[in-house]
Image (cartoon, rainbow, N blue to C red; front, side, top):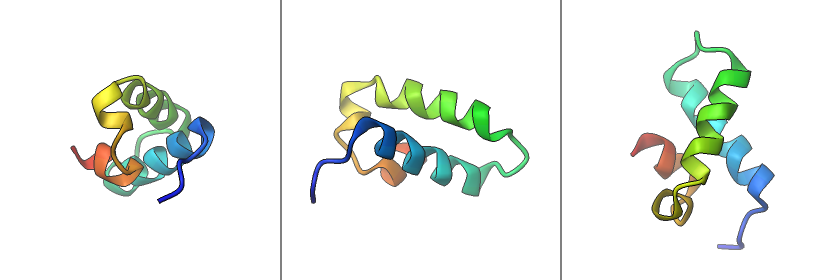
Length: 53
């Protein structure tokens, strides 16, 4: 798998989070995705997998 740019990884993670919590505002989900991305272990995962972790 090609390495994603941080902005793409965060967007994909936020999209997956939205699938689980569709009533939460997109901006808030993006903030959560940024927090997930900051974790080295979670960032090494596929964004969808990290969001589900």
